[in-house]
Amino acid sequence: MAELTHLDAAGNARMVDVSDKAVTVREAVAEGRIVMSTEALAAVRGGTAAKGDVLAVARIAGIMAAKRTSEIIPLCHPLQLSACTVDFAILADGILASATVRIDGKTGVEMEALTAVSAALLTIYDMVKAIDKGMTIEGVRLLAKSGGRSGDWRAA
Image 1 (cartoon, rainbow, N blue to C red):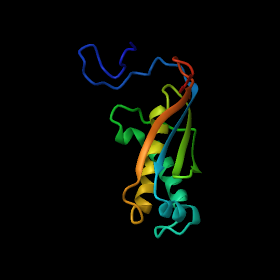
Image 2 (tube, rainbow, N blue to C red):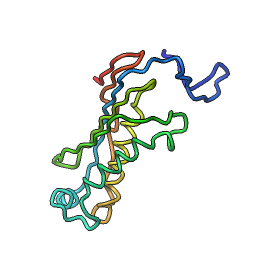
Image 3 (cartoon, one colour):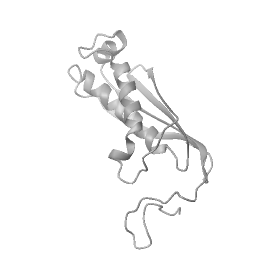
Image 4 (cartoon, helix red, strand yellow):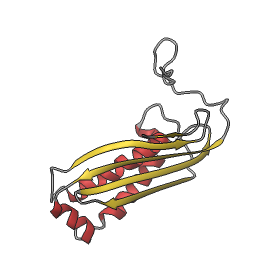
């Protein structure tokens, strides 16, 4: 079993010391989806939601959230991201969101990618909840990460 890096020898929570880590290019990709009614999906697709362009606002929310991940996930390091993209695909029953985050740094950006996707999906929910309060957010997961001491990883 892998060592839990956010716990010290006594089991107390701690921020990982990255002082001795090398600066490398690190990237993480995450995804998640929101399932909604055909009426809500039509409003998103057609740009007719009362609150405006749902996907444009959700994209900005995702990018902003990635940049501020350390403010909401207690043991994350504040990071100067090199890049963050949030993209959407319209599905038959909802919307798939994906985020790619990159940095030249000493720690990975998995949490930033996951936070970007989560915030984007929550923003979609907020913007069309007047049409469909029964939407579900599901499948938020890390798809891939690269760089750093632990190397590359891809979801199965």
